[in-house]
Amino acid sequence: MPIQHFPPPPGVKAPPLSFGARVGDLLFISGIPGFDADRNLPDSFEAQFANVVINFKRVLDEAGATIRDLVKVNVLLTRASDVATMNVLYAGALGPAPYPARTTCVVVALPDPKMLIEIEGVASLRG
Image (cartoon, rainbow, N blue to C red; front, side):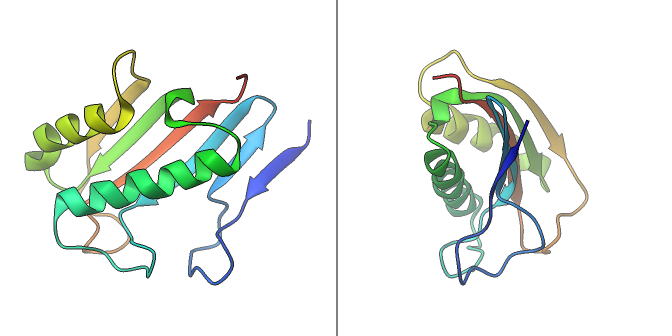
């Protein structure tokens, strides 16, 4: 089964990875941090979360999917104090239940010291 890769857009500085990889009816989305279009990280958790959602939706859209096609999500946070806020923002971004299966982890650090959140996921492309 061929693998379809979704590389970073031209001109976007990114580590050596695909933003997403499709295998059959599944789309695996790399961890998406809260960078804006200019690759800046806002200071607030809420702004970083909003950027994650924007960037996540771009990968899903490019693959022909929507946020409602997510079946599994992993959320990485650097501060346990952001869990309650993340739950409210997450529910707002994904819309009404049912929600995808999810794991939320609080980690010591992410690749950039200013990163407060990173989300990865798997979407079904069955339509």
